[in-house]
Length: 159
Length: 159
DNA sequence: GGCATTTTTGCATTCTTATTCAAAACTAAA
DNA sequence: TTTAGTTTTGAATAAGAATGCAAAAATGCC
Image (cartoon, rainbow over all chains, first blue to last red; front, side, top):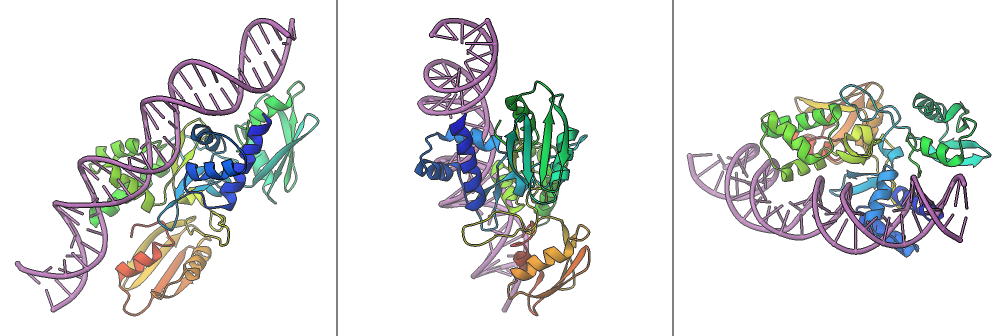
């Protein structure tokens, strides 16, 4: 949905640029910008974007983006397995025909591509990574929606 | 206090080793281990340890250590200033006489020492960093308590 | 020890965030 | 367009987390 993805972008922007301490605060900013939504929806948005709330060094709390909160490969360790979040370095995703093009911070493409491969579903034939760009090649018959949904399992994006 | 610092250690351990989804859950583990405390205290402990709650990739939430959630130097950006958390790579702190000795992961000492210097208070004369160890030199007259409290402004430790 | 100060804690409460449920909006296909 | 399935949403509520306050414990100092 158009409106939702814009909203998510705004949320990402606010969280990365300002010190947000509560959902209510963020809700106000969004509302000022013209988005109408409730705290319930915002909570779900934040969950989708993997945005975390952490204590800051000033006695309060602050919301942080996953790229700031989960360096690739050094994340939550579980008893038996290791979870990897391909959150660090991710910038954006776009499409060109059936292909998805993922932009990353310099030098992150390889790592993130590896993550995508590692979790690869049958929807993805493979990836080609440069320094800051990844081309994701979908299986014949996989449309943008499906591909996006698949990638959303690894990347902090709106599926 | 003896008991508290042990408790904080346990908390760090649990959070790093297991998937903790709520304070209540963690409370149970601590209780099993013999610590008696309430949710209120645990909340304060988590705040002190800079432990964050973030959405995981399985539809739930998970508590994560700051070292896993705030890479040095790429943290919350505020409108005007930049906050740096010296959380990544930090391992432990001990004392030798009036000096504090901070252990870090390999190669992190320099960065963390720089953070300490950057925020330096009058309680700290300076730091000397190797590869994984930092010697923090206090001003004459600054005791361990004060020094610890000062360092706690930069490091995720119990002050 | 006894006194002043600081720290830690629990209780109760408030505040904040997540989720259930049902309705509405949207999508894809016929 | 109509239908069936999926997604998004809000209202209300449940669940979870933070904190004001006062008491208790610990610490430092004389």
